[in-house]
Amino acid sequence: MDMVKKAAWLLSSAQTECNPQAASQLLIKPRAKTRTVASRAVFAALFSCLLAFAYALPDLLVAHAESAAAKPAATLENLVITRASSGKPLEFKIEVARTPYQKALGLMFRRELQPLHGMLFPYPKVEDISMWMKNTYIPLDMLFIKPNGEIHHIEEMTEPLSEKIISSNGPVAGVLEIAGGEAKRLGITTGDKVDYARFAPSN
Image 1 (tube, rainbow, N blue to C red):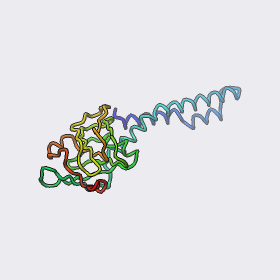
Image 2: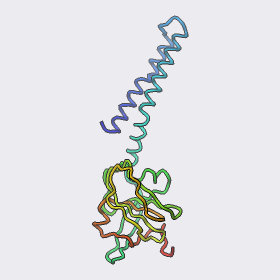
Image 3: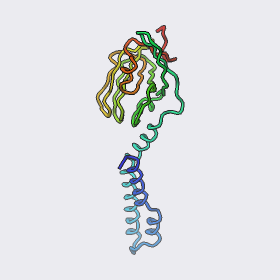
Image 4: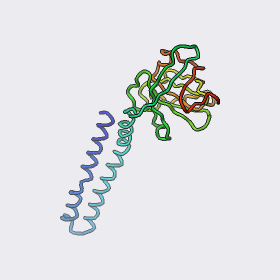
């Protein structure tokens, strides 16, 4: 059972457990002769409801994240890589992870990434950056970019679902993630330049 179906099943079970009509029956027509027994029955029903939702919640959150992340952003931006060894510039269509949430989610749960597409992670200051592949189903090439746009380091064919820390190997201003194997296929190497508004050649 996949995560979305499992989450739906758990939610259905939780809703069954938390049946307002059943709980109301206990209040309207308690079988016990005392109010104390009826209150205990209602409490037990509500407690069962809370347990069911608590059990379902983690899978529901994962299913929601997976559903949201599986779809590329509606708006794509242009990014160009100019190769130091000459050759035609490479034009990419990219998503930009600007917020902390977008950076944390990245390309998690994606099932594919088209050629000449990617996701850019710009950072407000130049620093050592660490990435990982948790919940990422497809291999990626990670291009670590200096503030002047020069590609400083390339981590090729990262391992899907791995929690191994991937280092920028020095201070950088951003990371471009593209499909695994694209850097080699397109001839992208360190020293190539990324042309995007975030990176200034004068730096």
